[in-house]
Image (tube, one colour):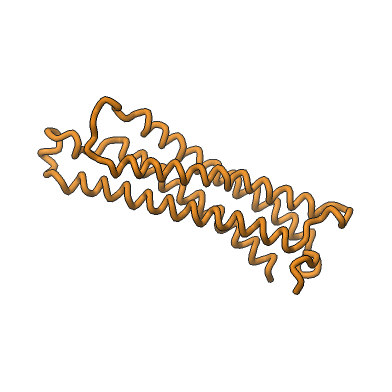
Length: 188
């Protein structure tokens, strides 16, 4: 099969265009919701930190950095969902010259899938790292002693960063599932 072949030769083009637009809209809103929760939680965590207080915890800073990278990838992915909607509109064009070919659609879906998978990996690593820091804090001191050593207390910052990472994982998961499902439809 030639990569420049028409999409209509392999799938039901009007049905695929409608499905593409519907799933991209659904994926956009789900990712936006999860992304907003992640972003707000991360902002609360970053601005809620007492910057004058020295935390003996460089791991949490790395977790925040990874969370920011993952959210930036999610922003790209949300933008990329608009690209899916534009492809759906172009597929519904009466002029076949303006319609994208199968190779263009496949490439666009693959970029969306890869960006979601990379974001999923980064958010997963950030979650593991953040949860490791929280676990280390809980194991470092007996619970009765936690009030006397502030660096070993679990703070709301720790939970907010974990919440941001888990929601980002969910958002990237929905993006990956959308891209993978549409990609499988195009490839069949």
